[in-house]
Figure 1: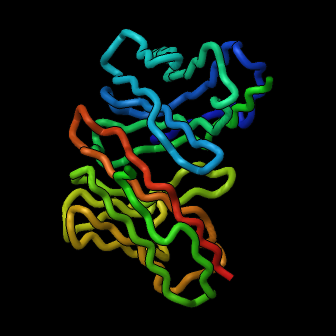
Figure 2 (figure 1 turned 90 degrees about the horizontal axis):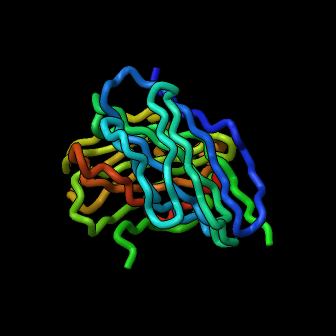
Length: 115
Length: 114
């Protein structure tokens, strides 16, 4: 079965600190793609960052980075120097290589950044 | 400019009525998707399409039909709306190729079935 699990339903952090959101996935595919998306309070969903399974180096975009641990089927999202506007719901997603059209989403983690 | 546009943004429908949600993209993407979002369930795939005039079932297709008359347009049809179909619906597009498979979402349609 292919599955994406986010166990943290809600996290609260103080502004300017670092937060890590967890995500584990299940797939039998040897090649796959992992994504993080952000849903803002307005409902808009935007792509943040992506990790290709065959790449060993962790992806980094701005103040977002990934902690990819392939043996543990884990892809954590790290946000450094958090800002109030980072408050949102973050979805982890996986696209297995055997199905180019199917993206499987986790249930999301709600991040609250406090002043 | 929004490259994936959904209409309407919100709709109230009666049980048993027909509902059509529309999606238009200007990304020139081949792949389009309809997702449903419910509290506590994340995003679930209803239907998708990778070419005009063809649609495929996703994970929760029951009660929904889809139509892709052109590359730009993708509709979701509820022939007989039910209370359980109250949700937020998102359309998305993607290039779909091996290396370019990021999803680009519309703003969503909030559907309430009464």
